[in-house]
Image 1 (cartoon, each protein chain N blue to C red):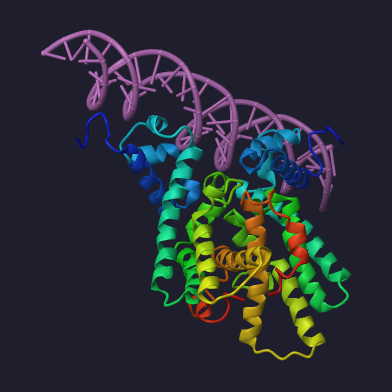
Image 2 (cartoon, protein in one colour; image 1 turned 180 degrees about the vertical axis):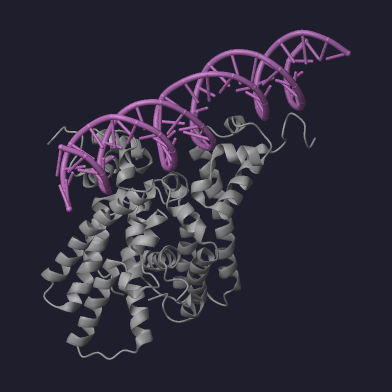
Length: 193
Length: 193
DNA sequence: GCATATATCTTGACAGTGTCAAGATGATCC
DNA sequence: GGATCATCTTGACACTGTCAAGATATATGC
C-alpha cells in the first residue's frame, strides 16, 4: 500500500532520506522533521522506530559504514597477495572519503559513532573496518612467514590504520584538496611506511 | 564597571564561556543563549560581536588552537635537535588531544575549521600547526645535510602529519583509550615511520 | 559643555527544532 | 469478530538561532 496509513518500511525510508539530506545540504540541514516530511509522514512518526535523533544518526552511520566496508572488501579481493591487499585497503580508505567528503565528518565528527562502531572494550563489537584490517594483516604475516610479538603487531596495525585515517582526515577537512593530486599520491609510497 | 549596562569585554567573555560549556557538558550543549546567560547578558547581545553562531565557534576554535600551538612550540624548544623535535611534536600532538578529547571533535568535527585554520589555497593562511611542522622538518633536513626533492618533502611531511593526526583521531574517538597505554606507546617507535 | 553619532545591550517576536502525551488507525492473532 | 499491539497523527512544550526596534552608554565633533 503506497499511501495507506502505515508506511510499510518507514525505518529504512528515514535512514535513506537522512543520508540524502546530508548529501544534498550537509549535516547541519538534517532534522527529524525534514526526514519525516521527505517520507510523507508526520513529524513524530520517527519515534515509533528511533528513540532519539541520535539513534537515527547511528543507523545512518551503520548504513554508510556498510558502504565503506564493501569498498574495503573489494580492495582485499582484487589484490594478488596480502601485502598488496594492505596497500590497496589504505588507498580505498582514503579515496572513499575523497569521493564522499561529507561522509568523513558524518562518521567521525559525531559523538554517537564511538558507541556503535568504534573499537570497544568488548572485542566482539570491534569497528568492522579495523577487524578487516587486522585479519588481512595477520594473513599477510602468515603468508610471508613473519613472526612478530603481540606488541609489534599492535603497533604496526595502529600505524597502518592511523596513516590511512590521518590522510583521509587531511584530504577531507583541509582546503588542500583542489591543489593536490591525491590519486597520484596514493599510487606512491605514502602508505605502508 | 562590573555590572553596568555595557559589559566591557563581552567578546572574550563569550569565547571563554563557550569553551567552558564544551568542557563541562560537551559541544551539543553549546548555544548562543547559554553563553550569553553565563555572561549575565541578554540572549541577543552576542550579535553585537559575532554575526553568527558559527563565527563564535570559529573564534573559540582559534582560541583552542592557540593553546594547542603553545604545546607544539614547547616541544620544539625542549628538543635537543631537530630530529627529536619532530618526534616530540608528534607525541605532543597526540597527548594534547588525549588530555582534552572533546577538543579534537570540536576542532576537526566542524565545518568552520576549514575556512579559518586549515591549509588553504592561500599559502599565507596555512594551518599554524602545519606551518610549524614544515619549518621544523626543513630545519631538520638542513641540520643533517639531507637533500630531498620537493615531492619527497611533500610526501614525508604529509606522512608525519597524517600519522600524528590519525593516532590522535583513533585515541580520541574510539573506546580503545581506557584499555590502552598511549603514553607508553608514544615513547616507542610508533611515530616517525 | 553639549549635541550628535556610534557601539553596545535589551526586549519582543518568529520559525524551526527535539521530544512527549493522547488519541486514531490499521494489522495480527486468538 | 474482537482484543492486542505496532504504527502513525495531532497538539503541545521548551529550547534554539536570528532579526527588528528601541534603550543606554561611550565616543566624537564643535
